[in-house]
Length: 117
Length: 115
Image (cartoon, rainbow over all chains, first blue to last red; front, side):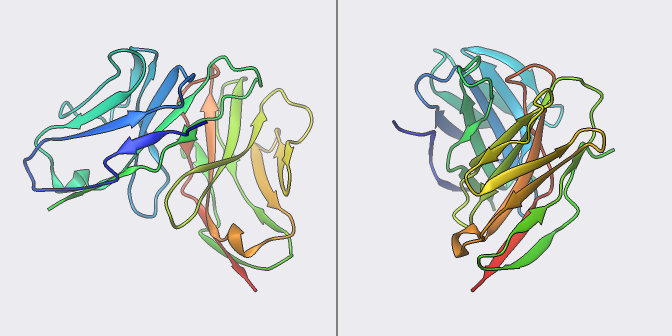
């Protein structure tokens, strides 16, 4: 049983470039979430999907950010025209809703650390 | 107002002793869930324990227990018999409303277990 995977694990890019991250959730999980975490802070919600439908986007998510989950399996998060303030860890999580346990815990991937120079 | 408040930025605990990590929350929803996650220096977020707002019993998972005081809106994590591997950041999080909604996290508490 594989967990949530993310690719790449690290990305260094120059300001103004576009970057794309991939997340593969746990296979039977229908919900997929993206969070961003800056150093010393807790994760902040960005967006989430139920299968291929994007259910909610944070107001923090500028129009330079876009996320997709085209077939309800893996998801991509793209940042266009990156800025230094985008430097952070981007975390993906998945959950099985409704699950058999009655809980809705989210399982996180290892994250993609983005550094914008 | 902060939805999740963790007032202890850092704590030392002696190996084999118990430690309590504080978490208070703010919501007007009747249905919500409270979660604790551990984040070691390697960076991955590890789910530890869950408490539903309608659960009458405090949640327990091995050495982890959640002291849920609904009227006070607190959900403190108790780690018993601390081990060196418990050294990490600990985050309290809340899901408001329907199951499966997003999580809101607190600022975290760093725990360092001393041998």
